[in-house]
Length: 245
Image (cartoon, rainbow, N blue to C red; front, top):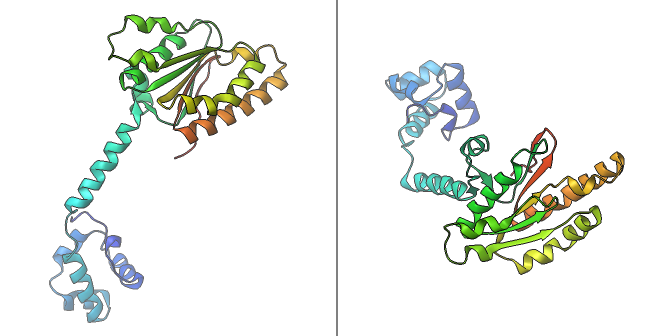
């Protein structure tokens, strides 16, 4: 309690200003004050104001059980919003894991194990009894790998897969995604394997415009549906493209 700032007291601004100018920064600084009269003389404020300071400092007790419980629940809720990537270094980089409703892109050169990591993430969501929608844009993701997994009954039923190999196909998929999610209410994870592949046949200018538009629509869909998007791309950058929440 003694480390609490003076500004936490419910006092008029003029009184708080007088305390600050006199060097009082925390409640512990008031412990040396002998009386309201002494404080009144030191701060050159009316006795009624100094009495209010003493009274306010004495009623400023430690955090209540209710506030402690609220803080615990807030932290618990935040932790519940995280899903492990099943790769500890990446979890540490992300502050504990993937956040529901956020958009992530992992980029690297061709041959980097982006799709392996994507399947690890899918496994994490399935073990939490949440659905995963896998969109393979490069014929690189084999969801059959889950067949031999030690999972709860019904977990494999939470996997949905589709293949998209053209820009037109990707646009159509994104347009139909809200309706598809309505038929798959358990789905909280959207994975794209080779997300940049459908754009390769377009000119650089058209590619950039289409990519920005599709990503903007996907971000809105993810935020609205509490859907986490994870996409692998073939370049050397790393992006965490989440709106501030």
